Image 1: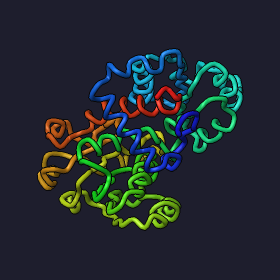
Image 2 (image 1 turned 30 degrees about the vertical axis):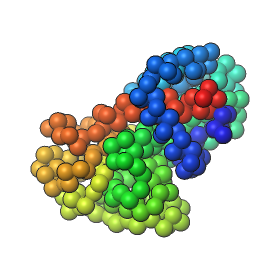
Image 3 (image 1 turned 90 degrees about the horizontal axis):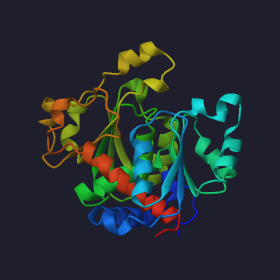
Length: 307
């Protein structure tokens, strides 16, 4: 039962619950009109202490399509946090007004902290370099729709693997399904953190390899998950400038890939995928955006007890 539950990281959902949410998302996709009033009378608060376009608008569109209402903020500079109000107090106040909160915060662990003081369910919309569970649900709905399921895939994660919370979340989720293999592609400075390898990959017994050149491994992949090098995660701008163009997916690299491989990206894209790739039928990242709204509709409906 998902009603009233916090969703802070992908592990908060069982495999059965993930499958249930993905199935409901597909039902909504096929017949959205049947779901347009299921959350009437419910209010979602979107608390975004860090910039966002797709995630915030996707949450808001999801609730509105379910017949609910939305309030919140997209810029923390207009909130009482600028006066020194603690996150705990902000959550105590906001959770008194609404039925569910979606929150993004640049500090790791902020969502978990918020859940300890909230009177309503918290959905983590990204906490620093930790987790982004609804992006993971977006990715999973897309993979299920386009690749037929969650098992037996070779998945390449390319770009910023050190700070990339979407990578951490999706790899953790996919490690729970059998026969998946991971290929981690990054420069040495942005490799997957050792703590993540020890706490997630090794306990799951998942098979994985590392690589520095995308060209060397792209032909082995069923799914390529591209990420941007995130400027906001760097303390030294020179390091960012040196690494930001490490991997650029273009037509030449796509020629090396399988005809049934799909390319995903959590967006925003900077220049890590050349625009010339957009017309390739394997480019699924804009379909992924639409699937994300349906994934969030399904999750909101379940957590609020509307379905």
